[in-house]
Amino acid sequence: MEHILCRAEDVSDDEPLRVTLADGHAVTVYRWEDNFYCTDDLCTHGDASLAEGYVEDGAIICPFHLGSFCIKSGAPRAAPCSEPIAVYEVNERDGNLLIQR
Ligand code: FES
Image (cartoon, rainbow, N blue to C red):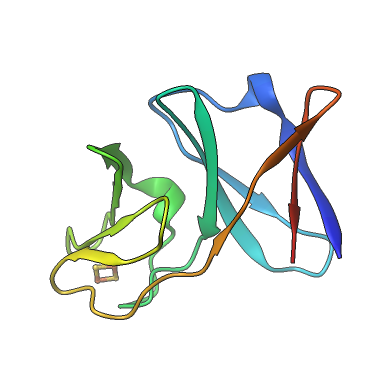
């Protein structure tokens, strides 16, 4: 199912954006090096919103225990994160960002 996340201009380089989809699932959208990425918002290690974290070197740093995930692949980059996070390919159409889920 296709979901419209937001307008492309709503996502800034230094601030991940949390978006709640129509089905209630929350994702986080990132702009990094002129590309858009999207992951689940909930950290796989605990009850943290990744949108409250920050991006460094292509990884989202979780605000709770400073574990991290690659925003491209979802692979864990730093402990205590060990389970990958779901990632969604972001497409841009008419200035809107969309994912399939
Ligand atoms: Fe994210 Fe622990 S909740 S690193």
